[in-house]
Image 1: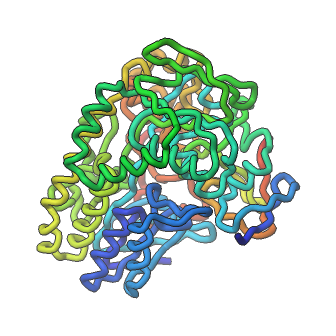
Image 2 (image 1 turned 90 degrees about the horizontal axis):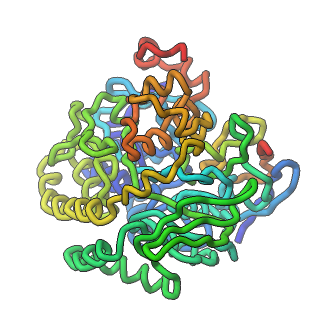
Image 3 (image 1 turned 60 degrees about the vertical axis):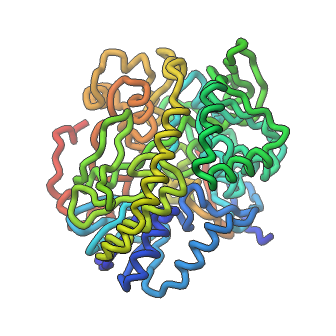
Length: 81
Length: 434
């Protein structure tokens, strides 16, 4: 299976080429995807782009839904943990 | 920038694929768009690790052979005007104009609040299925599947195939309801076959009835859940809880277009006539957005709507008998998987209902409509625009979800700035200051 390398909070993870950024983050296993407005840890919930709980920073673009975004080689992902 | 299509189809699930195929068959120039990077919608979502179902593979291959169909991946609809949609891709904004439109926006999962449901490790049931298909790691994880509806079985089967240790499936409907449901399945032979295949895949995984999760525990992440059964309650340790309480039609786009919505139930559905015409001229709708009826109905309706959108009335009318039969299944589903009122009472005053703005159920106590609640508490004003909490509160019988306002999804300012759609220039619902 073809894999690509993604950096999650600076840590390299190798994921299948068909994976979503959400999967890459889950493999890197940070404490959470984002912090809620009162500071609670949150992670992907709906998996289909409607709940926005998985939003992260991807290649310096804020608030991107990780579950809707395919991984690309060398992609830089930042969670909010 | 504007691109024109004779027929524009929004949503590339089974209904949208069938609609594009049917319309293209009459020579129409078709645009098929979806916010996701791949075709298939939810039920036919691409699996990074396993082969697609034969029907899904065939539908997508057939469509790819149609030169008059343009596949517009990662196109998120932001706004709608007369005969035109404002769409955003990861790189640009574009306006798509159309002769006729087919709305095949499908459904989302109904997620009900209960104490602990915001912990990482708690996901939707269809949600975890979708994540796993995109290589989210579930291998060796202890997963409890709970909630209601046939989706729980499909989700459990996917998770099992991906190596999860599925501890059990907890269906809230009682055993008697499930028995009468199973006894009626012979009327839909393809459903019967599907159910038997799922049971075979899930051999050895306990399927509990009248059983539901009342609380999730964990410090920063899920570690255990409390289960209520007809025989009492217990605590089960697990890594992941995949929980969904059924499906809710996605009606934001038809709502924005001014299509009449059917508001008889707790959740609105797009109102259509026999030939899938909405109340707006040249706008058709097919599949789950018209009310939850499943895959078979979606495919037939996609065909009808696609024929109609291309002006082929006779071809559409030929499918009406099939549609009626498939739609009857919807009534059977709704009746047998009706939610136990106990599930409506799980959230306590301290339970967060609006996950975007961290608004608790207690904070909403004195409000009787969504607008007043929104203005005072910000409930429903976050990034999901009330898609999760609005549907949950409607299901709980608190108040119906408020009418949507543009943009349909959060958008980049640059996208809104380029739009000539009047909705973005003149829309005024009176509470923009909030």
